[in-house]
Amino acid sequence: MPHADSSYIPSTITTKAEFYDHVVSHLEALLEGERYWVTNLAQTSAILYHSYLASSLYGGESIHPTVNWCGFYLHPPSPSSSSSHPHSNPSSNRTSPLLLGPYQGRPACLSITPIQGKGVCADGFLSGQTLIVPDVESYPGHIACDGETKSEIVVPLRNSHNAVIGVLDLDSTLLNTFDEDDQRGLERVVRILKDGCDWS
Ligand code: SME
Image (cartoon, rainbow, N blue to C red; front, side):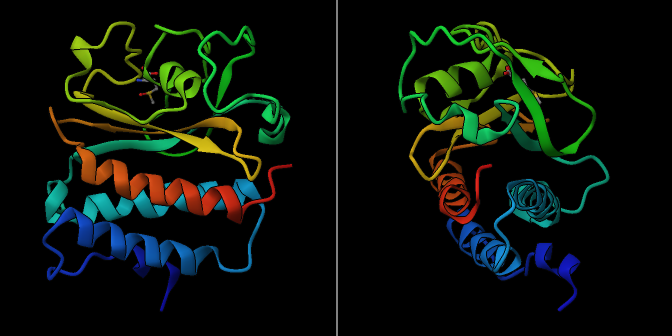
């Protein structure tokens, strides 16, 4: 099968649980045998973004995507440098920014300061918890990289030592796009990356 066909979503898939089962199995196949984190995060962004674009559960094959941004913010110079960061440490005084990593979508903010209250990515990174934002305008400190974004989900990304090294961030042009099914599915995705990459 050509690699691009991995993001094809069969019409028989009618629930988010089925959607993520499908995407996760194709992601595992795509990453098989590869451990370089840049490659794997780039491929993950691509399969997620194009799977949402292809799925009727997320607006179908519209010219205007529902999920309009999908990618990673990470601690430089390489994700492994964050291994001292505990899984949950809101009082962390490390102020080096999270930097834009592999993604799909329109150009976005290059860096995000990891201070609590300074955006969804910062809060997800510092808390080590997935954050579902049904309406970005109601989220204090939300950083608007794209005025079309209406809702968002941020999932912490961990390395094999279980340290938070960044976040997976998804934006949507509709309110209330992401729910607990997306959380479960995307947490499966970051677990694959956690153990499937060499973070250095
Ligand atoms: N909205 C994010 C910023 C990143 S963009 O959505 C790609 C935030 O509030 O942290």
